[in-house]
Length: 225
Image (tube, rainbow, N blue to C red):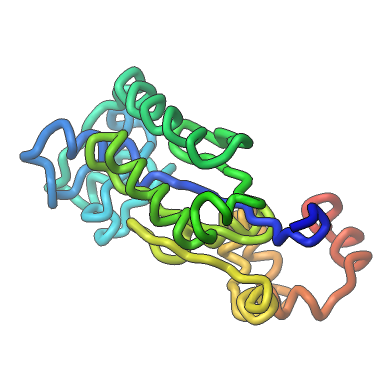
């Protein structure tokens, strides 16, 4: 295939509840139980297990509030050295899947999968093989993988089937997918911005399209654009 004919694919790999998952892996007695990783009574939640999330606990929540919502959770101080060690193991296998890898943080990365079909048999097969390689390299941890023609949507795609998910956003489905996507799923749209959008009656990306780029840029500047 000529370079101009290739379908561009970007993969986003996101470790599931990374810090908490490492703690559960290292201490089997924590598996299946709510785990909150964070700093002290006045700190905030760094990461929590999916068992804790069922009680409404989430990242960046004050630890005091997290303890009130889930008083029986195991609260653990972060072990950044250990998390970095596991992250390095994961990072070590990513280069086997693409020559272009960008670590976005300690627990997530982007891979350019464009033109890799001849090696892996398609983006879906590549995603499955990547998930298996990450699990083996990390000692049993799961990750969620999303793939899309653009980096921005690859990150959104990886959130669709967490935990341990795989979601491929094919070009033919992009418009329909975006039409029903809530604005809360857009990276960078926080609680205050959501409130501003709600005042305009904007709750989905379909609503966003009802206004021009000039409208959004004029209203919210760079964030609006």
